[in-house]
Figure 1 (cartoon, rainbow, N blue to C red):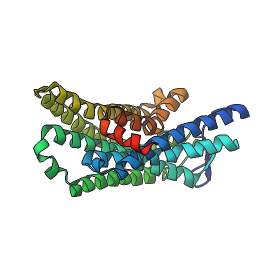
Figure 2 (spheres, rainbow, N blue to C red):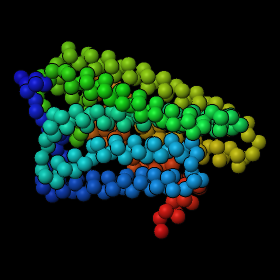
Figure 3 (cartoon, rainbow, N blue to C red):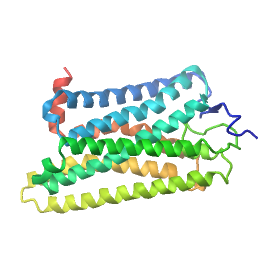
Figure 4 (tube, one colour):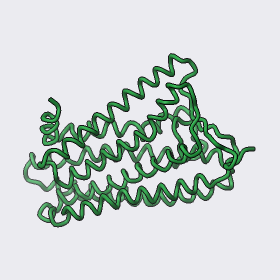
Amino acid sequence: MPNSSSVSEFLLLAFADTRELQLLHFALFLGIYLAALLGNGLILTAIACDHRLHTPMYFFLLNLALLDLGSISTTLPKAMSNALWDTRAISYQGCAAQVFFLVFLLGGEYSLLTVMAYDRYVAICKPLHYRSLLGSRACAQMAAAAWGSGFLYAVLHTATTFSLPLCQGNAVDQFFCEIPHILKLSCSHACLREGQLLVFSACLAFGCFVFIVVSYVQILRAVLKMPSEQGWHKALYTCLPHLAVVSLFLSTVVFAHLRPPSVFHSSLDLVVSFLYSVVPPIVNPIIYSMRNQELKDVLRKVIP
């Protein structure tokens, strides 16, 4: 049976057998990719060009848009290329690069969402200390920590995953290289190392989740004490988008990477992976701009 030294490429999941359906999938992915580029590009342009949006909340949103652009650019272009050229192949190095960048960008995104929860907590619960606690230097350090934690996760997971011997062929039942599906190709006893690392990462992720929950409990208590109905409406409108993004991101990532092997099902795996790797870069700009009047005003100026 092949091992990691003899595998030079992996075979990704084929969406369709007929040429017409392959071209349809290419067109669909292209439309999704362009929508993500447009939405996040507009967010980046609006925040960069208007000085009124040079605040901590929008600084973190700018970083989120960059991470979203990176994550969707890691998966969809290769899927589009395979659909267009009627192939399933991805090189061993390309697969490792896909895993690295996806873990890097998604890990950084989750860390950034945790930082954004802290930003909302300080803004609503400690407004008088907002500028002192979230100055430009502090914001840069927190953003750097989010990107750095994602990079560290990526190095650990990629090195561990691709050091495992492969005993079950080279067919990956996913449209991109995903750690759980690569582990299915590894020898069962060797998977324990990556499994232990996944459990450790899950514990860290749970710690971030507890921090987010505690932050929003404090925010809710502060909002309920506000005498003005307009004040707590505004506070909730700045928090609800973040909660929606966190809920979608965390639920799908946890299910994709920590479900037991008995729950593996190709169609379900495809839907869940699509939800956490493709959907957030499209819906995040919509969610954050929907109830944000400042951002909508700037976007109207950006879009002629």
